[in-house]
Every structure is written in C-alpha cells, then in structure tokens.
Length: 116
Length: 116
Image (cartoon, rainbow over all chains, first blue to last red; front, side, top):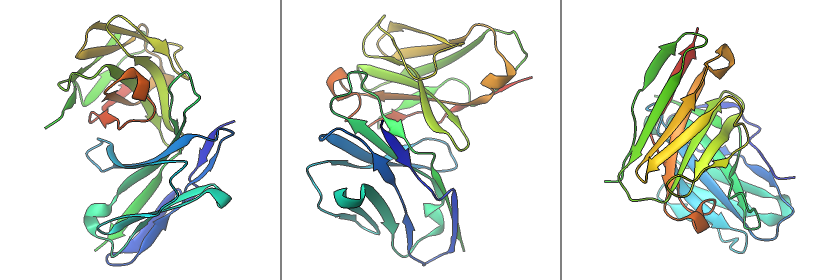
C-alpha cells in the first residue's frame, strides 16, 4: 500500500541554521511522483517541487534543495541558512501513475519553527 | 496571478446545521478538490471533480456532498454538521483530469469550521 511518512512532527532551529525535513515513502508502482508543499501561517499550501521516479537528480533552488534516493525510498528537503519566513508546515506527498483515482497520498506534515 | 478563493475563513456552526463551503478558481482549471486537514493526519481527500456536474469520492466522503454547477465553482456541503467535522477545509484546483495527481495543485487559504 502507498504511504508517506514524515516522522518529524515539529522542528525548531535558530535562524541561519541548516535544517533537513525527512520524507519516506512506500509504493509498489515503478512510476510515481513525489511532491513538497509549504503551508505558511496564512493557510494556503504552496507547491515547491515535483519529482518523478525516473529522475533521481538532486534539485537545488536557492536555499532549498531536495535529495531523492530510491534506494532508501526517501525524498528529503533541506533548507540552508534558514530564515524566519521559512517557518511553516511542510508536506510531502506521493502519487502513483497507475492510480485510476488520481489521488495524492499526503504525509502528516512537519511544522518548522525558525527562531530569530 | 492565479487564485483559489474560499468564501469563509472561519465559521462556527451548531450540530445539525447545514453548512456550505464555497470555492472559486479563476484559472479555468478542470479539476477541483476538497480536502480536510487535521493535526497529525495530513490532508485527506473528501471529494474531487474533474468536470462540471462530475464528482468522485475521495477517502472520507461520508457526511459530505459536493456540487459543481459551473466550472469555476466547487461547493462542499455538510448536510447535518457534527462535532467530528470540526476541521480545516482546503479547496484546491489543477489543470486537467489526466494530471490530477501529477500536476501542481493550487490551494485556497482554507476554511476553519468549528461545530459546537
């Protein structure tokens, strides 16, 4: 069965520290997609990244980077030199290409608190 | 700027009341979704619509119904609200049915419903 686990319920760091949010997934499908979304205090989830299962290249976007490792079924998210504006709840999600219901499987989310 | 607008940010209702949550998107998207967000459970799909007058049940449709009479509007209806429906409700949209679980989702800011 498909599943996404974000074991870290809450992380608190001081501004400028680096922080990694973990995401572990389970799927039987060979073609799947992984996502990260950010939910700031305003409530509106914002798309950050999508990765398909055939693309294991790491991605870097400014202070954000993502490490996709199929061998460990993980898709971890690192924020370098964190800032207070990074405080949010971050969700990892999985979808399977063979899912006729077109659904996303969501992790429980990790609340990130960046202290000034 | 793309926009998903939810009619009410905060609602307080009494047990047994009928509740309407409205969502409007201005991006001409085919797909619209209603999610429920509860702490520790991530996002759970209530209903999904890929076209006018079409609807598909998600993971937790019990106690809810939906209406999509126009492409831009997707309504969530609680026929008889109960205290266990106290939650944050999130509306989202995405472009085409074929990419319902592979494309970017655009979210509204959420409607926090309290049922007393």
